[in-house]
Length: 533
Image (cartoon, rainbow, N blue to C red; front, side, top):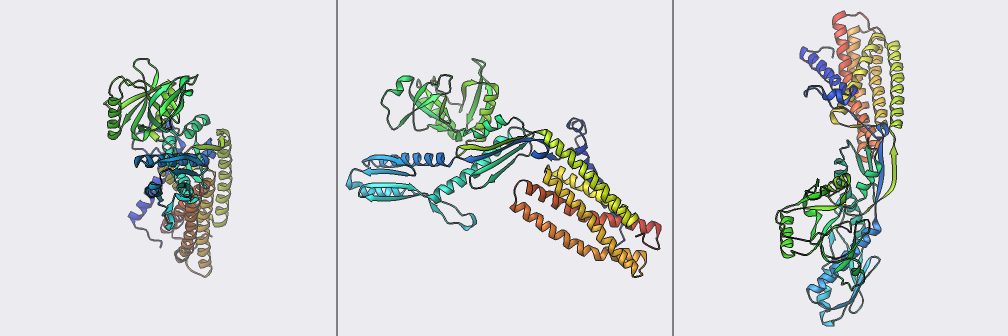
């Protein structure tokens, strides 16, 4: 156990030096790191929300609005399928989670039943072996009268899917803000927790997170106050512009194109007016649709609608064949940039409302860091003094290994770009204690062997050999606990689990390898008759 070949010694020393090298960037400013050569490690640990401040927002999926949208879509689908087959109907309407319609021609009852039953969708819910669920039921309370009702299982499925899709959209939006290590996680059945360390502009974050960014393109029938007085068909609706004095615009309800066809959006400036605008570009399919629509509707106004607000309704002067266009609408540079960001990230599948918001100031983080440093220094000094007082020279070896263990932990966290938070600091502190515990186990074994009359070399060799099994069991059980915390926990608990697991692995290495190497080199050089314990 005390023999180390030359290449093993070189490898252990190299690993220790690498740990120190990868930890050093945390002691420099970003400007100093930028001035270093590119081959020098420069990654730093990212401080969490509780250490450097930032924004904390909890969003909730607007379930009533999602249900309302779903009912409106179902009503439009009923109208569409009945019209496609020329089935006469009357009394098409909706109430809460149901759509009702009466078939006027009794000879078409069978055909209508087949078409309406065809609207039932089987929602795949295979998570944990779940069964597919139908999103609606079709009932006939009396002959000729059909009632289509959304099922609770189908609504729960859509809310769950909306949360999952919203998390991905929010992640893309927050990433484009240029922040580092945002924490975006599901909270409960219909809530999403967003924490962005280092971001103090909470108002901008809220504006970006809350906007659905559903972009659609519609043909315009008319505009101005007169559209409010005229008769409107079920195929049209009135929306308003985003001007200081909103103007009503009568548009076709059916969208000719949607934002899902976009592949890029950028904030630019108009060559004619020098105002900030948003340039967009369609994919191949969208470009073909856009070209066809513009060719068939030259001279007609075309509305660009964002979240049911008419951003602009320019007249198509000539066919647009390039698949790109511009959105103008009294934008500032920042609002144009934000709209371009939202369009690139995609639309949210449902409206999100803010149920909790909090800004954590950097002062609180600075106080936490200062308190953490003080606690670490006091605890470290106390441990060093205790080990030296209890085990003398071997205690110094254990202290050196403990310091190297801290370097290893910070080096791995820096290399992974992990976020360090207060629970993470607690995990590091616990792993430091485990590193010392391992050396205490080894030295007590060595002391026992020496009391039994063994020589110094034999006592050390036997002590290390017998203690390693106990240390392995202890570290393995701790590692299992850390894994369980990571996979079942969220947020701070995961941070604690990550640093605990890393510290657990590095402390095992330093306790049974680095310490053993130092003791072996000391024994080889001095050949002691007794171990100074």
